[in-house]
Image (cartoon, rainbow, N blue to C red; front, side, top):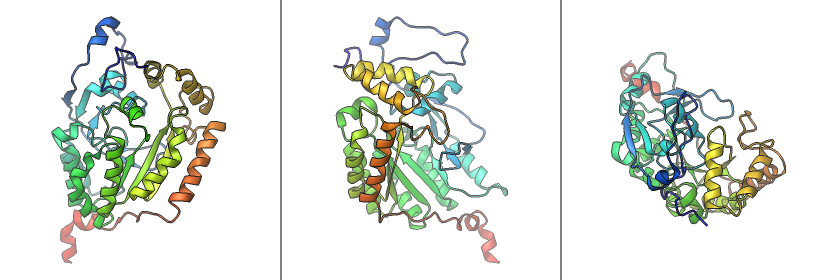
Length: 349
């Protein structure tokens, strides 16, 4: 039974101390229970916007994050740790203090116009969701897509929000020239679980509908069943794969939950509040997949885990691919248009 003091609409239920701060303060729990501050949008001015990704087990080289922090509030989100670098907590502040990069489109165009720039697919976002609620207010993701379309630059998008459908017009143009691929992250088929686990994301039904609509408009769509959390959603992988295929997805991916740094205590606090009857079971199963720990930073292992439980999930995934995605694929990115549109005058000679 969920605790009465549970903050509805939020994943994390408290703010762990920022590990970079020398001094921290704690509020009385009775005061905290009554507080649920509104989301605050904070404008920041980065000098560049394209980030080089150096992790060998992440399948893209460049990413752009128009927003830091994420109001979706996914309690397991690995991006929470990055909020410490901006001076905030990985807990509630990750969901309540959203950093907005209004200059991102201009910075992107500036970088694309550099002579030394070589086009490679850019991921939107790779860290926090480009279609989180802030996008409805600021439209930065759409403006970035307009720049990418102007230069015919390839882009991948991953999101949990059906708000991506507002950009069907520009996504359709990109898809017509093989310049875009979209991934919908769908964690569970249980709407009740989704509301606690990912409180401000689109509903499961809305996400599957987004997969269908994007597919109907010729936009290649995959589904990421992530993360798999033993004891909560791992048993849904086959059903989720079937629904994704029926909606038109061309492929399926998955990752194992990993709770690095502050995310471990945040998740443990969350599950003891929301599912106290199964909290120990879930936490112990996660540890079984990560060498006895909630966290795992080992490249090549952290995404899949190891041990009997992880192997059972891997086998389910392989079977799901064979049953539902064997004859499906997405077209490769078109890498030939960028130079023509960056230097259009050359086409006159």
